[in-house]
Length: 95
Image 1 (cartoon, one colour):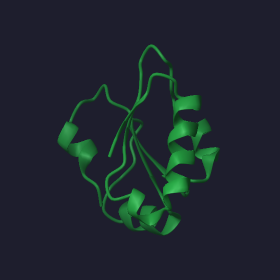
Image 2: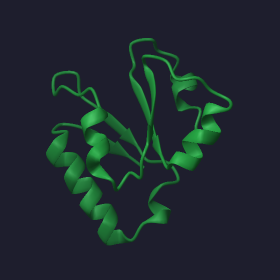
Image 3: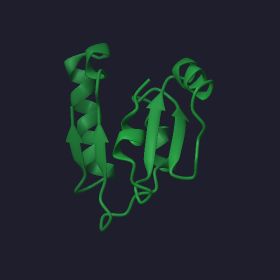
Image 4: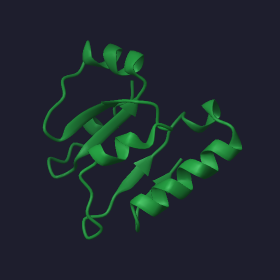
């Protein structure tokens, strides 16, 4: 139950929580989506979520991966990071 969106507390930030459907379902019991706080019910490795992100290179993007990589093999993480760099050029990853 990440609370980063609320800690940032900036109405200009568009925040996406990407997690498995079970985790998002639990989150929905406690937190409501807003136009700037969007839930995506997918595995991070299901790259179809990329199309749901409102991204422009001039606005930029930051990816936060807290407590994520321990669930994947190193080879999968490398694929994910390369794909993020390809689809979201200029983006930054923090983990």
